[in-house]
Length: 428
Image 1 (cartoon, one colour):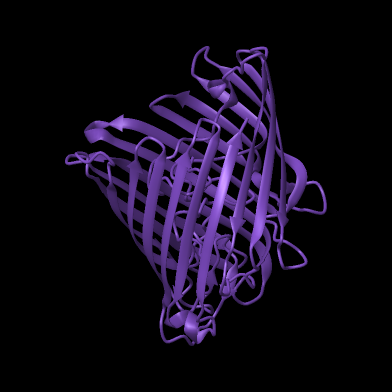
Image 2 (cartoon, one colour; image 1 turned 180 degrees about the vertical axis):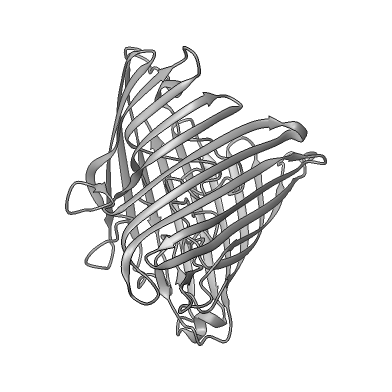
């Protein structure tokens, strides 16, 4: 999955969820059946201007510590638990947001069972990460607190052909009590993976369902929602050192008494200059997520982004989500030697419909102005670099700036929001 610094190209194929039985690497001086480890991450952020989601604080330090414990008594059976403690120092608001603060809690706790007798099978049950495809629809969003799920994940097949059957709920971060799954919201689905098809094509078809209780229709009627999302992700390499990714999904179903008619799409093309030692790569991207053009017709056109890892896709300062959004991106990344990575992005943002809200990276409405004369939200620049000192130490720094467009200016949010940061991670 993409690193927590956001430096890998956001359109690079991401592996599916890490499997403890597949990736178990015994440590020195420990029995082969025992896993002990963890990670310390620290990040200093110094935003200025006004964020769309809150008044920006001054300089603060965000700390995140993870402790891992695993047991594998047999080759086909494994148990894993992970605790996480996240805190923030120097935050100017009395209450730090849940993206930064949650004292020690259970982040993961699951059992893995594997069988190779007839058809390869693997079952993971419990609190776990889920990361599929490019993580546009299901991912851990590891830049912040990081998302997990109370879920069942049954993988049928392996290698170049497999499918994951999913059922569960996302975990709700709560700094005042033990984290629990989000009440009244469940998802189900199947996510397939077919690799090395003719012409070097890789295909990931999927079908997802999301059920939410007690939602309101356009006329204010209280009821339940069921959104059905069939989709597919296609990626591969083309002659001349070109690469491509396309992802398209439609959404149908019901939202209380309203019908759901929404869709999303994303297209990426990249070119690597292979003859240059730094292997620079240029990329362009267009992403679209529909909005609701009429709030009185009984049809809900707002795209549901499900549970994505948005950092690195729609601006690395994390102000916008894949929901009622048009995004045009141009990017450049390169590898300086073996240890240094650099990436720069330029984004243009527009609303798909000014009759619908502007949504933040978590999918919540943050601005609604149906009388706006422009759909132009603004444009954003980002630059980030990382230095991999060793297998366990990693350092990085980044800077992003959002320039307000006409839509934000009319909403009296004509700010210049800057987001510089430095960070480190230490694995053990």
